[in-house]
Image (cartoon, rainbow, N blue to C red; front, top):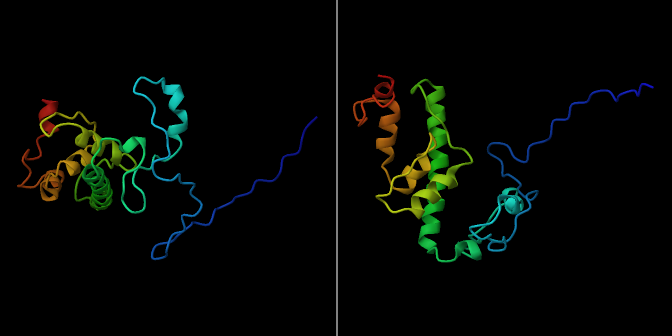
Length: 172
């Protein structure tokens, strides 16, 4: 017995904001800062599934660090991490535009992964090595590498310390 199917429909949701307009974020379900549980270090991965689907909020609206995720971490470090993440997001936006304008041949943005590098850089000592794959911008931001140096390397200009040879030397 054949069941008739409903005709196909196309639904294009209305965006919550447009460029130049204030965006409405009331649809987001945010927990209050400091309320999300922090599992023990030896927990089974399956027991953290709920954490992967939510937002772990540490700083409240006044910039105060709250809850188990903030224990032992000075507020200055948390703020430095937030600044590094925001700076990475802005840097990424500008470098993607430059790449699309053919000002550089390759750029891998780290959209959505800013916290990984920022946290890694801030948790380690300044002379510890980090081993990122491509998306190292937030590590460099957290370690206060000058933006001019980063851009010169991406553009492979005369101020590039590697003189554009980083990839070519690997091929030899």
